[in-house]
Image (tube, rainbow, N blue to C red; front, top):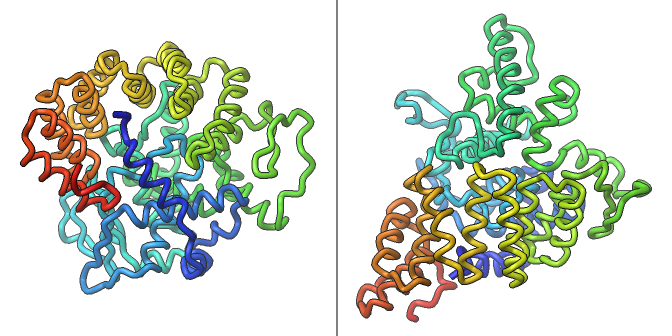
Length: 450
């Protein structure tokens, strides 16, 4: 079974739901960026909010009642970080629950249980937020939601140390830029000099990444002027430029003349591969998330011609070809990605998915083993390897991997459904039915019995 097939099916249904008028009112009140987005990104943000709000477990603390206003505000701010995402199935999947306090609360990250804080992000755990701080963010150019979910992006490689998952080239450039900017911020904080970047970013490299992410989304024009190289790197990492939203909002519409060499028009917007390579890539990723695979593939093909040494383009092209059932081409594209960068974990992950989808689960085991040697608790890789073992009729091994996946992600409905298939294949109907019921409890779109 291809990884996440059930998840994609559920998310497609969620994205297709009408966006309530009351939710639009919450966006207008609490998420000013939503009104500035061009039509394509505005639609994507609303679709992402529908998925995010439905999938997370929302917990009100200290008597706070969770409302749609709270869900939508937090979901939309978190999803700002995903607008240019090239991982179509990623909605901060490692965050299963969001805890919201009415005001500040006593934190525990870092071992200081007595410290009052406004937000926390736990590795392999929840995000905890203060609702009063979120409301204050409307007037103080800060964004605690962006801050804490930037920590979650940082932790995708297994550690929150201020270096999110990056290609080798991106990693080297980030190290050089971040080292210089971090040292400058520390110096300004020690001398009490004015700084666009919050002094809290001088605490450590992890807080630095979260703080600069806040500034990128809240004060993009000032950041681009005062920290141009840092801003450009973040624009490449997040795959969009928030200044464009401000320009679009001030115009009321995209009314510029298209570039002479702009070969694409998507939802009425034209762009140039020569000047806007990253914009092209981001637009293809958006099309991919909405299931418009043919349109996404056309862009990936052209971007690959424009920059044939970009491993990520070949990986995303492989994923799109796999969705279109063009398995041989998908495998070739995935192999090309790994040839260009065999140290990139997401490239290995995508190739494994493509191989499993193509019925070549045995070949996928090498990449999955590589991922699990790097991070033995990678629930995603454990799930996918369990699926591969099921395809190979190695059901005992499948159950062993899925047990570990469920241990690390105990509320993952797909993992229970996959383990149910393994128990069923072994003739253990009792355990199969129990897992199938649990999968249905976690996700009602999965049948309670199979």
